[in-house]
Amino acid sequence: MKIQTEPIGSIPRPIELILGIQAHAAGKIDDQGLALLYEDAVRDTVGKFEETGSPVISDGEQAKPSFATYPIAGLPGLQPNGVVIPFADGHQRQLPMISQFPFRYQTYASSYLERVKQHTSLPVKQAVISASAMSLLYPAAGLPGYTKDEFIADLLNEAEMDIRKSFQNGAYKVQIDFTEARLALKLDPSGGLLRLFIDLNNEVINRFSEADRKRIGVHSCPGGDHDSTHSADIPYAALLPLLFQLNAGNFYLEFAGEKDKPVVLSAIKENLRPGQTVFLGVTNVLDPRVETAAEICDTILEAASFIPLQQLGTTDDCGFSPFADDASTSRDIAFKKIKARVDGTRLAEAYLSKSTAFA
Image (tube, rainbow, N blue to C red):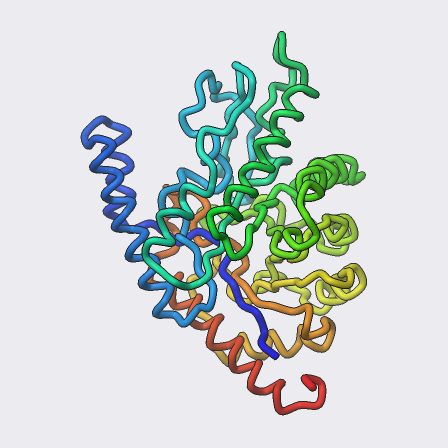
């Protein structure tokens, strides 16, 4: 038996690409010049991923402006005064709002997949943004001529297409980034907002066959931007009973950064359903210290005492750079952590293969 291990998604961009994005925004380089920088960054990312021994890779989201806003980059009529997301260190991210309709994605995630598959024969995982996150783009005051229900109907179709196109283009798995889950509980401790989000995302997931749902995953974390979080104070015990109601086959959970790991593992054990696999984060992407393979092995062995091995995998706590301008972690550290995750997973696998628990 193998213990599955997969990345979350984003990798810090090379400094040349970050500067190129800034130059493009200032009109100093053209679209073709920026496209060449994206191509170089993807090629380098794939090569470094392969060097880690990772059995599954991503494109590192090198060409995404952010994990959340890639579908709407260039969408006409976007207004800048949308939902504000505050982080613990005081900085903020703000979503835009739509002002024109009907709502349509400008970019599907499959376009990134096409680029990365030119450079590798390894299985490629594709991350997509959740329908619940995109639902926040609708103005709180409404939009004359375009009801919230009409917007949601369009959004569900687009979110479905985002996943479906990724599968059609050869994605090994599709991961729905649902980082607003814990934030929803912070904004509404009653759980009402989170339930709305769960129902909305299930409306998308339920459009897929059982076989496809086994290859759909959901990523949840307390946010990770410039080494800060937006909802780390929300305990997993409050989140997981609702999160595992999503009809996905895989769950990618921040774990290495959690302070009370036995409590988290107990909550997972209590709520994980048959047929679901939980990938625990074993590298803390907010901490520059690179974990050792032995430390990661110990984390996995602890988790294996709570979670059936056939339902256990490993991952990183979050993407290393969910927003293109986040350079708080270096590419070198990110790939060292990924290699440590792969090596630590294999070390745990070897140890457990000798035990009766693995049989």
